Length: 138
Length: 138
Length: 138
Length: 138
Image 1: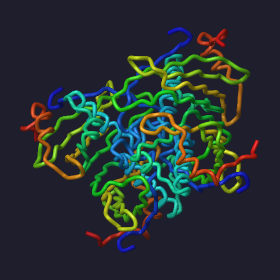
Image 2: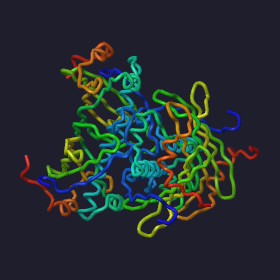
Image 3: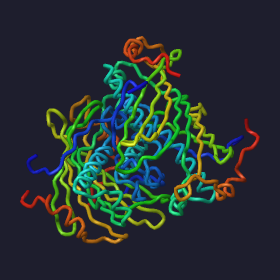
Image 4: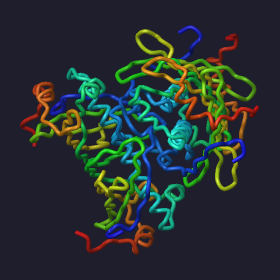
């Protein structure tokens, strides 16, 4: 997986395509979110249970570059790695079309932790993510 | 408004259209839900605040007939009336295209009230809805 | 699979849940549509390519009974069988939660075929579906 | 409207909220897209008709800063202005909560024009947008 520490294979669902016949842009944000949440699950936490416990990871800033649009029937893989920058965890998320691995989306997602409504450093995330941190990536 | 007791004018948003170039079927369910919630607001309640208070109106059964598809740029009006049948409140919801009033959707939505996780008769809804009930409609 | 002729295992994505903490009703319609389209693919056709060829299967009528709501993290299986009734193909679609197989949705989806904008009998579908038809089911 | 050249008042729909009880991030992208398309309509073009004519405006790059989350019942206004940068049209799109005008989203959306599948300079857009261009904004 190279620099990536988690990946999720997915397939376009037709209802995600819009009248241009390609996946509507907002759905890539859904793919990225779903990938982060599945990563969170793999790391031993659950987004829904965190919310019930008053811990809400929230996105502070998002950048997406749209490279190649996905179409009906396309399969793809959504990959990520993460870095800690101050109190932010920054997810680097890339989507590649299968099987040719053509880049679809290159995204950077800056997340912060809100605990009982207040922006907080999260020792919980520090613990969960410590073994996944990518420290020497450019 | 005839038999209808609430109506909401809306407009198709392009992201609601799918690769057939028409509004994706699931979005009509969104329109119907949004209309019921706006009706609830007009009746003096809020779906979100009800949920926080442990009161969740839920759909038990839904029937939709698809008459004419909506397209990009179309405006439409979503209308409803309701009846009480046993512990169910049944919403009769119709969507018409504007300005020609061509029928788009004819739906019946049977809702029940779940209070703190249990199916319940809701005296709250009985109070809220009493002045809206359509009793002599076929 | 009993009376069912196609099934698709799926998992709830968090963005499909609404403020009640359960899958929003309209998303079940997405699950049902995706299941039909994957069935279509398995049967040798593609919804997108059919559309490009001027052939649009459309839903004329839908009935859904909501049995048990799905939550964040839930896995489920979406199953279907179909019957021909006049010029309609009727899909009987049921969703069960995994692993306990608790019924989630029971749906009936009546579809017709629109060819170049006109309601049509579809000999294409007759050919595609003939080996899947469930003729003696109640 | 200050530097803004188009604005659209909108209201949160409950199905746009997720299990955190706030509008799901991807829906802000829907709001931004809908605002651009309504602007396009006001400028005399239609996204759907452009697509039918082989002209597809596509998003090449998107940056969103999430300031304050919207909740069930919130009303808001979505504003934009645009600049030409090389062959890109860059939309500066901000969303403010009503009535307190608290910033919700600050976004930059870089769009390019694809004509019959090829990245193109669009004289059509040059004509449409010329009177809207914001040339002296930082």
